[in-house]
Image 1 (cartoon, helix red, strand yellow):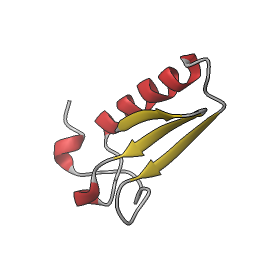
Image 2 (tube, one colour; image 1 turned 135 degrees about the vertical axis):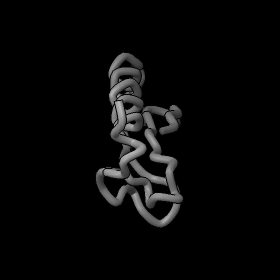
Image 3 (cartoon, one colour; image 1 turned 90 degrees about the vertical axis):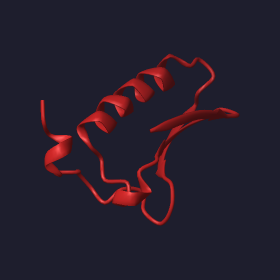
Image 4 (cartoon, helix red, strand yellow; image 1 turned 90 degrees about the horizontal axis):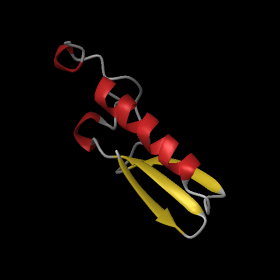
Length: 69
């Protein structure tokens, strides 16, 4: 998950193209942090959530390696 500020917009981008931006447990944690950061950024008027590549997100990543722990 990448975050950047562009003017008054706070962009959060899923960056897991190999899995069509499927969201793993780690990515959910990173998304929560990014949303908190967007909320704390006083100049943010809008938060945009998008994905790199062809997909914004294909949904949850249920692969066993992502759910261990």
